[in-house]
Length: 185
Image (cartoon, rainbow, N blue to C red; front, side):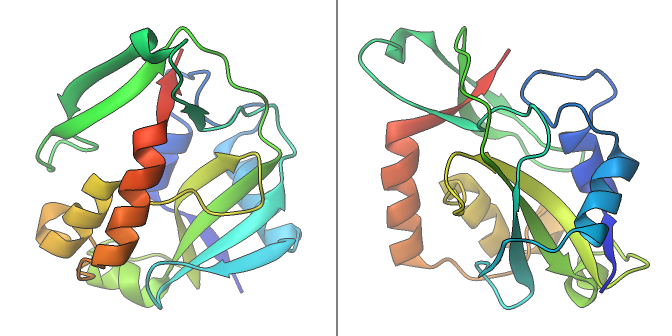
């Protein structure tokens, strides 16, 4: 099985201007090589048949992706409308500034099958493509953000996967994201 880092994931995980809330101490080529040379400690089913999550112990200094919202840090939350790419419509996002989460224990690579990526007009020369990565304290998936679930339900023409909305998964996601937020340096 050959895993490829997709251009979409490369720009988000390894931006031109390195940031403290992206993958640290590792180049895109080293990241891709590690995923291909080291078996994951766990493989989780993703939200659709074409999605798998490979759980690896964190071999970098990358920090956890999310921080719990508390009365003591709620004042550090920010929000804005943003798009992930130039082609996508902006959506409301929120994040912390001024917090420093712990180093993640796990990196959870989110993989899509080559067949799905071809449907999304993002073909790869491999079996699986990395579309994202979660940096976590536990060897588990962080629930997909509600807006990502909605974008997926809108279809590939709106930057999603075409998977219908699962109302129960959406409610679980809202529960998690009401209590947690991403962070930015």
